[in-house]
Image (cartoon, rainbow, N blue to C red):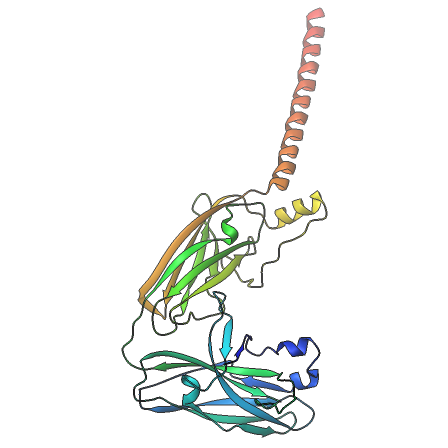
Length: 338
């Protein structure tokens, strides 16, 4: 059995090595990104995908299916080629001819065996410019894009999940500036995918609301009997209470002390903060979970400047008071001499 470690819509390693012409790699796209289907044991259902030919010439695309599972806790899929399991349930035409810059709809059928266990089953349908079984001597590298098929066999099945851990990245507790990254590890003990949705609420030393961050911005599912690690970040300071910047956290590199001070001033955060995670699974209020953590933000470069300004101010004030005192004392002495 061959395995392919791909992200959906990613090209194979051969493309990066220059072994596959880029014109082929760009020749096809598919929609939708994923399809969710369900059927009872012994029944069948159908789905529709659309294949786009982005090339300047007509192309014939080869259609194949593969199972997928989690590669690791990141949620990155591991595609497994083979003819067993849900792959054997999927029926579709093997090829499709698509004129240049046009698209074609493909209907596929999922036939569920009578004895199939209730729960979740997962596959991907790929479209490739190269055949799935290269001839002798050919290099078995293809340019694949695909649509995920999230399938459920209806019936009674186990459900259960828990949050194993919630913390800051590397379990660090003291930071000197934003961004601050969080992660939580979500364990799905059930037989179908679980979708945790909720927020991480950050509060300052006095309990005031500082920021609300979506706990699963990408709406990523945790597959059955697996653990998935979700990562989010508090990136912006001030502004709206709800975090709107969901780009990957980038840590600034300061060339000098002044740059650090300016960055900490523009993204001001100071003191002890608490972060409260709360998620609900599959929109079921009875399946809600919460955990908390805390951390400190101490922008020491900015604090050094502020302290220096305060010291200079106090010294200036003392000097002014001393001058006023000396002037007053001299005035009193002149009055006494008169």
